[in-house]
Length: 290
Image (cartoon, rainbow, N blue to C red):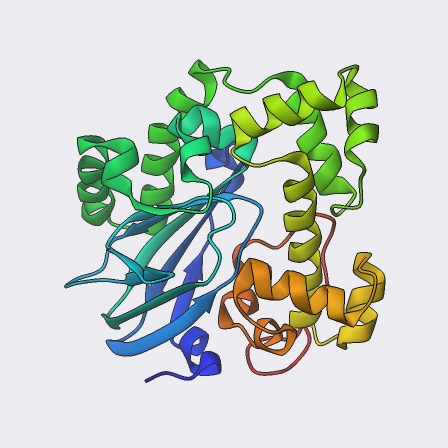
């Protein structure tokens, strides 16, 4: 089985050019050079994630607290303890959707919170047709273009999220989760109760929970960059190391040390070079800082 370092040394990563980028959507393509066995922890991220499995053979198996899904999946916010494993030459298109965009693209984002579901369950027969087109494409550039052309009509034809909710979400991101719900409500001219209700209904998560997830994401990237736990707790706004430990355990099912070594985070700077809140200098999979 490949080690955490070996996983990414055997994977080529492709990203789309500016011409096929869509607002609130990030894409990356992963191609494994050879067939191998692998088993990795996936770490929660403040996005709804689509993983389109284009592998030959059985592809990946996703284990979410004992519930297993195989093939292409949609991963909602707050999936908890999640592992991906398989024995194959993996090819995968990963699409990250801002929650404010996911509601338009999928139409079911609230139902996905805490869940890992088959793409067929959220997209019906269209998911199979999309997979066939992506497999038949001759390059990752073509695949990104096909995906963008499929997403764009859904993205722009539906206004599923209130502007006030969009504003509150983006304030949560730019503050790295260090916001007060009362303050967010004041900035959009709503009561706390109304913001809480609309945010939860449209994004599938409460404003407070969203802030905790964004704060965890920032802390996870600091841990992966090699910063010690005490510094990460302080810089991310946690009361102390114990508070950080509890939050990491809840969101990822891991200890801070486990998150620091998680191979899923090691590829982020390459596949998505500008994480929310700004870039963080980190170690490459081989241990060097990028």
